[in-house]
Amino acid sequence: MLSWVVTFLVIALIAGLLGFGGLAGASIEIAKIIFFVAIVLFLVSAVVGLARGRRI
Picture 1: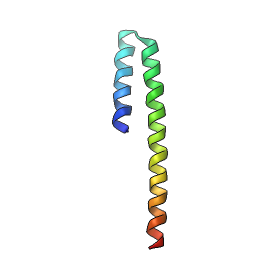
Picture 2: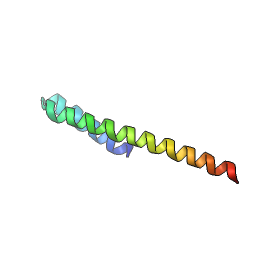
Picture 3: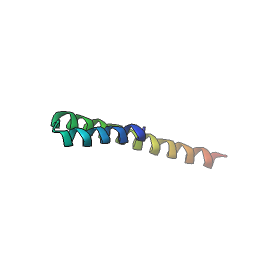
Picture 4: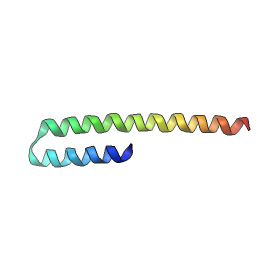
């Protein structure tokens, strides 16, 4: 998922440099959404992993 974030950020940077503001803004928003989803999934995975480790 984080590779998608980097891809969208690169697209946004290139689009911004070329003057495509709308495309750059949309790419940044998509990158933000994917980044926060990845962070939430990581935290959920970490909590579940810690909970399983304590039960054993």
